[in-house]
Length: 247
Image 1 (cartoon, rainbow, N blue to C red):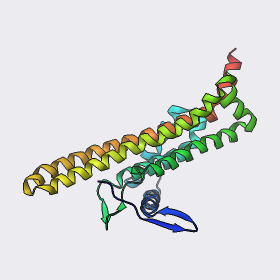
Image 2 (cartoon, one colour; image 1 turned 90 degrees about the vertical axis):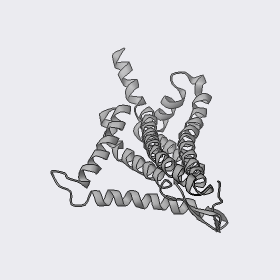
Image 3 (cartoon, rainbow, N blue to C red; image 1 turned 60 degrees about the horizontal axis):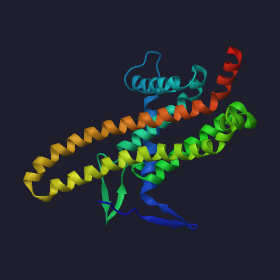
Image 4 (cartoon, rainbow, N blue to C red; image 1 turned 180 degrees about the vertical axis):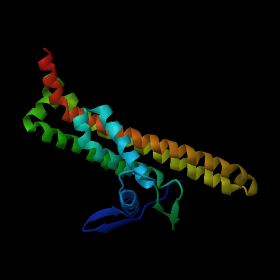
């Protein structure tokens, strides 16, 4: 069921053509959704404006459940961007699988471990950036890696790598498995003529619906974990101050 992806070498670097196409396509789709839904904004929202405001409120609730209201307001737009990008990326491979000369030219971006690892690494790096921005380099380092138990420093460093891996592989595994099963069902439907078509088409439709559900859940989980990781970095100083005041 696996197909190779075309590779192009530029300036001594290898570029996966399929990954580039689908990732850029996901970015364009997210931009178009935001652009179309925010044109001609009205005081009393209707239609597409209602939809985009619901998504923004939903991501705001995810952020506020992980951190204080003050901090959640700062990261609401980030949560919206991550949620919509991951959701769109999860859905792209469901309606279409494009194979040209044994090269797979279209799939869900998140069905590739390189893309999910890159996305997860960007999230972890951002958490450190915002943590330093909020607390300063010294306070951030001390609060995140040294306090309250200094000898746990190696474990906390290791935890940053495990967070990256689990964030990436959870998303990749679910989306990749879904696309593999869709491909297997499609192959089964074509294998024995009309009888397998009769069995395969309803099964394919049922799995499509289930894959939409799984893709939506994974977008929610990825966004939620991003907000949780952020809260650990940007709110540590505030929680420490509150503890001192209480004592």
